Amino acid sequence: MKYLAFICAGGLPKAEDLVVLQRECPRWIEEMGGRGVRLFGRELDLPETAATVRVRDGETLVADGPFAETKEFIAGFDVLECVDLDEAIEVAAKHPSSWFQEIEIRPFVDGLELAEAAARFGAGDDSVGAPYCLLHCLDGRPAEPPVEESIRREEVAWCKDLKARGLLVFAHALGHKGTATTVRVRDGETLLGDGPFVETEEFVGGISVIWCSGREQAIEIAAAHPLARYHMIEVRPLVSE
Image: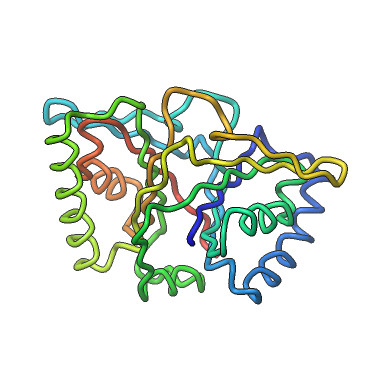
């Protein structure tokens, strides 16, 4: 089963914590890659580089900053393939970030396919363009069933168009926020919580990773996503490896 592990920060790490993270994170990546449970992952740029995109009455509205106005923010992610949630928790608890911050684990909705583009991205090959993360941010209020069905159809077309243009790394929905588990390790003890890392009405309902020429094109692509007409999409650059 595939899971998304969000690295969730409450601010920038202290200098001494950063030393530990820089030393231990490569070891975790090597171990989990060797076990075959970590497929790939990437660090997100700082939240001030984010833009939140909405489309209302045909007009694209862009606000600076992440979708939720809180001190907590998503600092990165890893895509995991684990036998079950227990293994995903064990893997997350070994991640050095769990010692200082939190990791939110959420299952992907069934059917996630990772093609050649994802393998290239995982290998750090960004020759196609600058990598951007699009977080599909929902407000918790579903649309009427016919509208939801229309969104799903349009999202398939949106993905096909980006894939044909060579810009799509992957895109997929996540389990509802009620399926989230947060993991922290303090004094050697693994502490679990139910639900997302921060309690707001809005939550991340899916994720897309794209390559593009830069911020302007990333916003244009986000505005073309059908969810932007009903909810919002956070656009944030990923750190190139």
